[in-house]
Each structure stands twice: as C-alpha cells, then as structure tokens.
Image (spheres, rainbow, N blue to C red):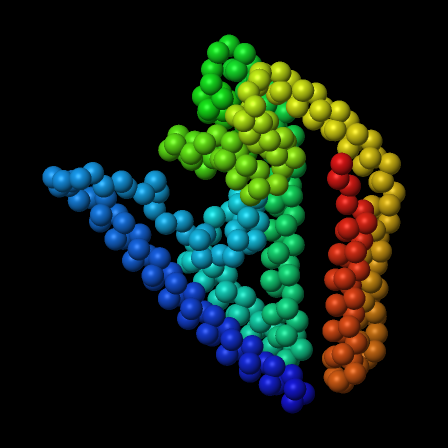
Length: 307
C-alpha cells in the first residue's frame, strides 16, 4: 500500500496544479474577451482604417487540435469555465472513491473517468457525423439545383445551407463565415472537410478545387458526385448487413468479462477481496483493465466498416 499511497499523493498534487492552471487560463481568457468588447465599443477615430478581427478569440483555442476536432464533431464548445467545473467534479469523485474504497478506488476513478468521457465524446461525434453524412446528399442536390439556375458556387452553398437541417447549418456555419469574409470557396471547403472528415465534404472540396483550376461544368460534376454517393450508400448498407453477426459477437466478447467480474464480485466477496487487499491482486486488476481496453480497440478496428 505504500506505493499506492505515493501514487495517490502525486495524483492529488497534479490535480491541484491542473485546477490552478485551468482557473488561471479562464481568468486570462475572460480578460481578453473584456478587452475585445471594450475595443469594439470605442468610436472610430480619424486616420487610416483599422481592420477588425472577424470574431473574438474562441474559447476552444486552449484545447489541443485533436480534442478540438472531436468537440466540434460532437457539437460541443466548452470554455475554460466548463473545463474547470469538469476537473473539479472529476477530482471530487476520485476523493469520494478514495474515502469509500481506498487508494485503489481512487486510482481507478482517475483512470476511468477521462476514458469514459472520451468514449462518450467519440460516440456522440460519430453519431452526429453519420447524421451529417446522411443529410449531405440532399444538401448537394440543393447546391446543384441552385447552380443550374445561374447562381455562383458561394451563393449556392450559402442558400443551400440556410435550407438544410440543423446539423448541416451548425457544421458549415464557420465555413460560410469564412467564405463571406473573403476566403476562397475551395480553401474553406477543404478546411471543413479536414476538420469533420466526411467523405461527401472531401468530394465537394475536391470538385471545387478542380473546377477552380481546370474549369468545366460544376453542375455536371455535382451530378456525378451525387450518383457516386448513392452507390456508396447502397454498398455500405449491404456491407453492414453482411457483418451484423461479426459485430454482435464483438459486443458479446467485450461485455462478457465485465459481466463475469460483476457476478463474481456479488456472489463471492471473499474471492473479490483478494484482488483489493493484495499487491498481486492490484497488478492483476491493472492487467485486466489494460487487456480489456486493448481488446476492445482491436475488435473495433476489425468490425469497423468503411467503404
């Protein structure tokens, strides 16, 4: 238990330092936003024109790029205040677990809470992007129709976005703002496709770049893209139907160790107590958790169907 006590103390110290850093970043961000608001309230003076920034600093700029992309896919835009509250709740849950179950419970709570949050974020992001992908076919068809009556590509994208479902509006809002502020259509679409990683957006960005460089009929290109997407959707449905048994088996294999461990803990408490009270039991629990995570990740790679 000495080693676990040292780990417990180090994690508490790191958690406290992390909370202080988060509150400091929240304070700095709040001051930046106040200065920006005060600058906007100033009356313009005579002299050369000053170009104002397109928008105030984004709260999500404090996150790493990978996490920022995940948050945008999930439709969440937390600021430093939300992050600080989540960190406090995480640390309090770990402390409660330590009081109730000891150092091992504290360590497991600290380890599993971020993993659970990442799983929820990944699940919500994939669900929203799947819905976004389903709605892109109608969006591209509206863009094609607007182009066929004489609208430019930027105008067609803006009008099609206004008449699209909510998820399409939210996902393409920043892209439409960049286009309206003067950024090229192809560059804006490529950036959006890289952030959301949607097959239909990659095709649209490539079509816009090709049309800009070589010319041609954008209406015909979109017609071919729409036909390709329809064929791809049909193949994906057949592929998912053919792999239903494999995916069901993967879910059973992933859930079976957890169910067995729960039943053993409830029916034979003396046997389960050995894992909590001994150093060898702690190592076996850590090995079981790591093995379960690696196995779930490998089964996810095997059963993932993408065409």
